Length: 575
Image 1 (cartoon, helix red, strand yellow):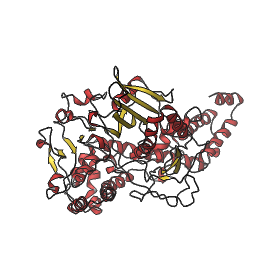
Image 2 (image 1 turned 180 degrees about the vertical axis):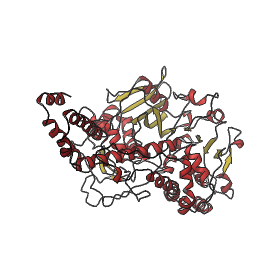
Image 3 (image 1 turned 60 degrees about the vertical axis):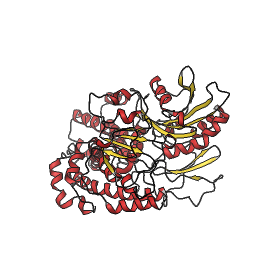
Image 4 (image 1 turned 90 degrees about the vertical axis):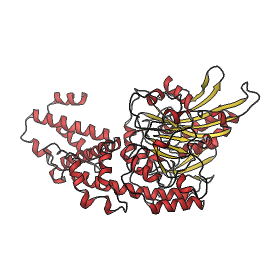
């Protein structure tokens, strides 16, 4: 799918309205298009905000302590990209200096940190881009721990970085080219667009005046921040200010209200409250489902995947591209979905302006704003919602209020869609009483699509959603999408971990010492090896077991080793 912004200066500000969301909420879930409407979280009743703690545990990017360890939990690096008359866009500054970026990654940052066709961008422009990491980067168990508690739309990826750019272009007679052109970019694995763009709003103007010392100071401050922990409210100091944010958690109530100022705060200066760390975007419109295809919030002709996406020898890839260069309208004219964003005229023709259009009508470069798609929706339009949103546009209702209406609608629609899937998936889980200490855990039964579809007549989404249409057809389309594959793999993984946890708990409750009394030494050694393997796996995966289970299992293993011959003690100790 192609998203085209006519106005390059407001890459992150355009809003979409009307029945286009009936299209998006379906298309994103089946994998034909994108993912986000972020949900603001309720902070009341939670723990007090966390300030700097030098003894925090590992964050999502690194473990232990060392140089820039805490910084790396939030950012990979900060970059300054400038325009060189001989080289073009070039990396002027990298901080920390020893940041581990490959040459390919540096090149991607240079090309993507300036707006495409930026001759019309005067002043300051902020936007987000996303690019592939080079192969060979190692993951971390801390990433798995963070992702286990984070909502799907905020989970870390092992294959991509986000770049948060602040670009300035102003006339400067002291420069040979006549213009000052420079971008300050924060590179991170975290999709925290509101937080990082808020930091750039106070950092970048100061940096463009005072240059490197200012950037180093902020990086040192970030290196003192506590780890980004889902469900925790943090106070983050930056340049004499304090940003108070709450990191959303998977366990949060979806659609909750924004973070509120904590009453028992005595911090000076008073914290600046950020209602969310991330912004309202397409991909969270299907939360808690995760959008499992590729997406690029900002894409240019210099992107390393440009040739891959523009080839005409194969079908369009499963990707969402955000562009501003009119070149792409012609190049990607054959793509099944094109969204062109622009200013909406407040007149009697408003309903026609925002109506979804057939992709065959996209003929010229000066096409009017709108959605052009070959996709046929399975569900009927929600006419009440459409009228409510159109009335909001006409009455100039604040965008925050419009967004809240859409969030609520899409949340309810996604929940109606996913509840039958979750109910059926839960039925595939073996009964708890079938998990015994003397056998390997039972297998999860396979997901049979036709069996699931047969449950919809009496337990389908029509029980909770007023929308009518071909729900069965929508589910069949969903089954063929990467989004279903991603959802199923994640749910299956969680169920397997639950089975492993139950198995560990029943093992600890069993009389294993009694079982070993009449067993040979070979059988006891085999039991020790199996239990040690399960213990290592449980700690590595941080399985959700009851308190004390792993400690009790470790103690039991040591007891068994102590009952063996002395020469076997040394074997286990060295192993």
